[in-house]
Amino acid sequence: MRKLSVFLILVLALPIFLFGCNSSKDDEISHYSIVGSYDENLHALTCEQTLVYQNKSDNALSEIKFFLYANSFNEGNKVVSTSSQDKAYPNGESFGNIEIKKAMSEGKDTNFSLNEEKSILTVSLDAEIFPDEEVEIYLSYIVNLANINHRLGYGNNTINFGNFYPIVCVYENGFVENEFASNGDPFYSDIANYDVEISYDAKYTFVSSGNVVKETSENGKKTTCINGEKLRDFCFVLSEKFEVISQEINGVKVNYYYYDDPNAEEYLELSCLVIDEFSTMFGEYPYDVVNVVKINFCFGGMEYPNLVYISDAIIDAETYRYVIVHELAHQWWYSLVGNNEFQEAWLDESLTEYSTALFFEKHSEFGLKYEDIILGAENTYRMFVDVYESVNGEVGESMNRSLKEFATEPEYVNCVYTKGVLMYDSLRKTLGDKKFFKCLSEYFDAYCYKNAKGEDLIDSFSKTAKINLESFFDAFLSGEVILDN
Ligand SMILES: [Zn+2]
Image 1: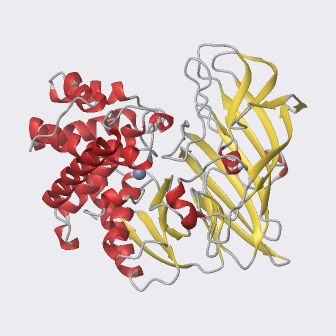
Image 2: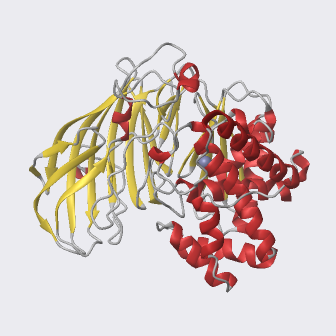
């Protein structure tokens, strides 16, 4: 995600066998089948979902846990900071949730429960599953949308379905149970295959992750079937206002969905350049399609596999271009190389923000110079430290904190994004360009379609550079580095 902080202005299912979408069952990774129908009068998406879950752990499992992001819109939860409240709720405060109606394990009704925050759904299994076995979990549920310009919600221009469905938690020593957070992206998931079928009023244009395999119209309703292979998540957006323009680059179809945009051609061109540049710099973009989608959104942008949100609230072209580059960089850092964004937000966000600087270094025609981005980050970071020290007497400078441990939005943005840019700039100066870029591509290669931890990145970079970089990273991550004047 890209937030727009004042400190940053310087640079700136019925079970699957009942329905027609082709199944793409893969023995190695889990498979979601979701059949949903959107009622625009109730602002509700009714779904039936079947997950074939592969137990890749070393333990026998008697239950499966899912993250229910849709419940973060429940009354009482804070999904935006006070400063973003007006942008999020132009029509007044509104709430949403997900109601789980039924759960089945291997075709038999089973028990399910929610934790106190309603963020985690636990589904009991009919029988234990052992390592390398699979289990089929069926869920039926209704997602009730809030009237909010957010990842999930309906606004005046678009209806956003980011993180709408119960997504299985990553299993480490147990299922990792993330919490809701108003700062940053509280997400963590494994790569999976998807077959999704969504029905909606024919007045809408539909765009999503994955590839559209079939679209039908009947009685004023459209139904779109999508297949997505090896995706970290699945998202879709509906709008009555969308126009779309497309261009192909290196076999990837790049689509720009927009409304009210005189610069549409330029943004499509830019998106193609970004896919091309990062494919050369880090490793090839392996999917057939990427959708850059203008939406009503209270932050700058948001990343999903094959689909990025760009906020229609951004009024200047320079910031809009910056956010497009940032969100597309997430296709490499978050979507392909995954990580626990709740525990280690720095891992994808710092690299994504620095990748954005690298793009503009290669493409000075957009008027943003690499040196100016670095200088801007230094000035911004110093200003943040000065302001916080004078107000609070101290400032938290550690990058390596969970989202819950950042006290304020500026603290999160400056420690994770701004300082992250300075960390990678410093590392590049230390290693030299040849080694530094080799570190990036080797790390991408080693963790593509997997999840990485901070220590994996440090190990990978150290091996490639043939230097132990632990103390270098620790100094930045722990907050010990004092920036030189
Ligand atoms: Zn981001």
